[in-house]
Length: 450
Image (cartoon, rainbow, N blue to C red):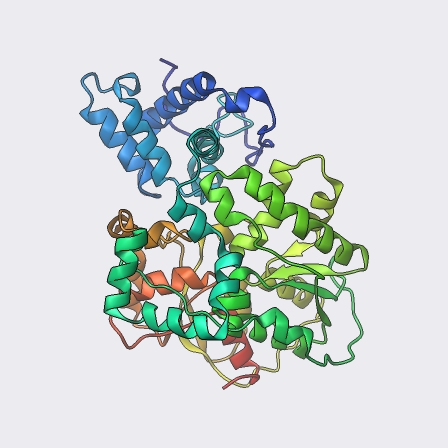
């Protein structure tokens, strides 16, 4: 058993966390004995610390199994229980970025999310990815099929039907009460035909003033209005917008399964196209924080020697980060026409771990007649976790503090940069509170939408 931590800050260091690249192409990464030893080492450190008990369900599951074991030690926890911990981790990275005092440069070198990712990868290489997980994580493929007009109508009607949801739960284990998005015609297909205004790029604050939009699977097929509002806001601020020549899923859903080979295949489509846009003077923006995080952080950690990956990472921005950078040099229009009232703003985990500060809140707070209540707690959604039958109840337990904050605030509108988090939170509150995306709120404030 390793020496137990005694709490406090990282010993001997006041440095920010240092993230090491994931050595997934080495034999040791895939060695099951080495993985088992590292799981026991890290779980023992977590057991002795317990600072992360309130972040997600992975840690309570671990601590309960330890406490219920014959000796009260990690060594007595059976292997099946350890894999239960792995299954409850959805790689939000919040433990690494905000709680753990033992991340590098601490010599104990604890990276809980990367260890969970390694465990998922080893198991899935050995056993294969289950059909349901493969399907739910193939977001661009599902969107392309469900976007066919006749199919789209059937799928959307089924998602809104109690009978359809019961059938879906029985066939795929998708919980009948979990919110599911509608499907729409492709935003990229429509945008490719649109006549764009002639705008001249104006560089500012490390931005080129010219944007290449990564539309994301969700923005392309599920809520294209969010991306349309982003385009309207950018063009209102004189920023020309283009699309990359090709686009597939960013890879985050596959990463969360540990399907690293699938992530690599998606990277081979996206990175060359985005790197070409960067080389031609574009910055990269995406409306979904998970996709921004994928290009900013996850791909560079998976492919540290790829110069194109690094170039894309250096020029990828969250939309509100981008606009606030330009605001710092007086390049953001503030001719707002509509107040937003009381906004309950939820900050998704994949935005918080980017460590860029509360840029969404800062920008929306510039709108006169607007009051922002910021909620920094996990919604419990994580893409596919909250829609699965076996995790729906747990996901709503994680979301409960957020739901309670929204109910107590009684806002005019609930908003989150993650549209799936918004739907998750809204499913736990009474009807009557409007929901929106911060980009849609910004477009409304400018008077660009009703």
